[in-house]
Amino acid sequence: MRITRWVLWGLVLGYAFFLGGHLYEVTAVVPNWRSGDVADVARYRDFFARSGPGVYFERVLYPTLLLAMLAIPLTWSARKTRWIAAVPLLVIVAYAVWTIRYFVPINEYIGGTTYDAARLQSLVRGWVMWETWRALLVTVGLVASVGLCERWVGVPRRQAP
Image (cartoon, rainbow, N blue to C red):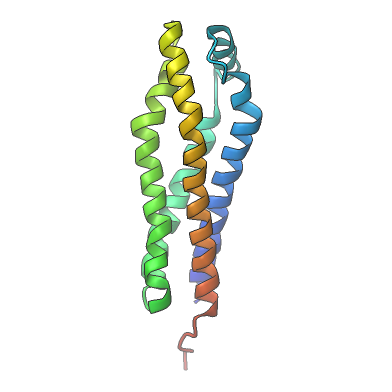
């Protein structure tokens, strides 16, 4: 099925875009405010006044979620791929819940105009530490989607008469 291959390759690309975005953010953006100093965070906030990394990740999240949901019924017929098809979906759902419950409130505080220096330091420290784990979670999704794609391509399918 050609549509299945497109969905699976799209899923791989979605996760690759996610991981690339996280690697860029961790290496190029976060070092500018990881000190947690009010002045550094205010400069970061002012630089991203109209748009920020969150906009990029939102635009990657929803298509990747949709593709992960489509991958399960499209690959269900092959027993070899059933269990692995759930992993990208579970990862993207866990990622979304974790982001909404933990990272978004911190991002909203950082985007504010007044800060308590001690609270800001604590929030930034936690954000930076957990961002590494979030990137690792995305890596699991990428590896699982590559594995699913590889296994699906290698699974014999019935040919249409």
